[in-house]
Amino acid sequence: MFSEKDTGTRRLLELGIRQKLRRPLHWTHSFMIALSILSPTTCITGLFSQGLIYGGPVVLVWGWVCAGSLHTLAAFSMSELSSAFPVSGGLYYWSFMLGGNHGPFASWMVGWINLLGQVAIVAGSTFVFVEILAACLFLVTRDLNDNGYYPSSGMQLYIYAGVLAVCATINSAPLKVLVRVAKIGAVWQVLGTFTMVAFMLALTPKQQKWVWVLTDFRSAGSYGITSNVYTVLVGLSGASWPLMGYDSVAHMMEETRSADTTAGKPMPYTLVASFLIGLVYLLALTLCIQDVQSIVDPSGSLVNVNSVALILWDIFDARYGSGVGAVLLLLLPLGCSFFCAIHTVTSASRMLYGFSRDQAVPFWRIWQTVDDHGVPVHAVWGMTFAVFLLGLPMLGGATAFDTASSIATAGLCLAYALPIGFRIVFAHHSFEPGPFSLGSFKGTLDEYF
Image 1 (cartoon, rainbow, N blue to C red):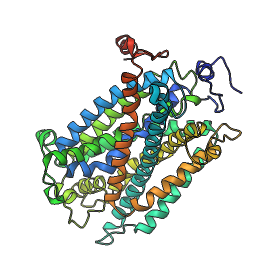
Image 2 (cartoon, rainbow, N blue to C red):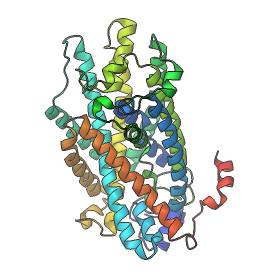
Image 3 (cartoon, rainbow, N blue to C red):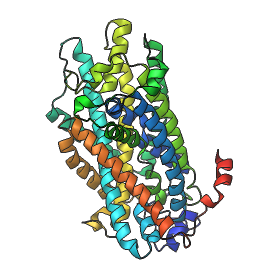
Image 4 (tube, helix red, strand yellow):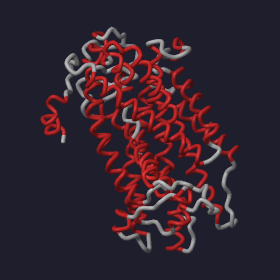
């Protein structure tokens, strides 16, 4: 079943790990899965109002540039570690190998931080789907009813649970099915986003000035925050979350052919692609805002409606006298969020599988079980149930969602940074890189870019 000619499989054996998962993935498949997980269109659609409220356009745009630069550097460092240790669950195992005498505790700590961050990021992406779908229903009925129809919290919970069930079912299928979904998802992320941008720019009757987009700062006094520094920090968390999830490449290592030799490609490529897609989408949204106050006013009647949906409504209403057509464009980020939810479950389940193999979680024997197709089905459904539980308070409102996304951002940033720090502090001289090494960073950049 498993070819020992594969360099990734041989490296696993050297590390004392028996190959149980199958390796049907090419590194481009890992790239497609990671691109669907980062899905800047999904995350920006969900958190655009947060950046606009806490700091305004200057925080949205320059926060994105800053976060993208830092995450790209982290992706190169993590690629080097995944090349040396191509193991499912990635980060916790790197911490064990690089933590010196503190390895066991470092591994346990990073593993749990990453695991909880994975749960939060799946919940966040699924909630964005629910939020966009609710906005679609509101826009369709807004002309028929002045208040429009907006699903209740209970109805949103049913939708949330249903989406999670569909995502878990797809992830329970053989991996070749997931590969096909990943291909469709990656194409949807790219073409869908640029189609939406093109229509917005073409239909917007009056665009904002570039100087406003690049320099306008908005305080958050109406939200009870008097410190501009704190305002910026809150706004920056919204810029970082859309760039989270590229550790999925590490979690899929045991299912990727020659994972150790190709480790230098998927993560950096994913970050660069997501950064560029997200920047174009972010600039287009900011340029096309027609009524800023309707989005940032905490006492407004539309405060619960997704901010991107309101922007699209205003564009169509100004152009055609009715905003119902905005629903057609809103279907594009809705699709992006669906593919994002599917593949965040993929990544999270592989994290749980790897962590369970080292008996680091309760009921580890259950979660490390693999079916006849080489899929950790129990881990898939276990993570899905955990995500459902986390979603219960999130569906109480946007504040709970913002809190969950902030937890995911802080947790995953810490999980990414700690193994890199352990390598610098504890394994600076003892670390032996794999086929991809930052020691030849310049040559690698010349070859790939």
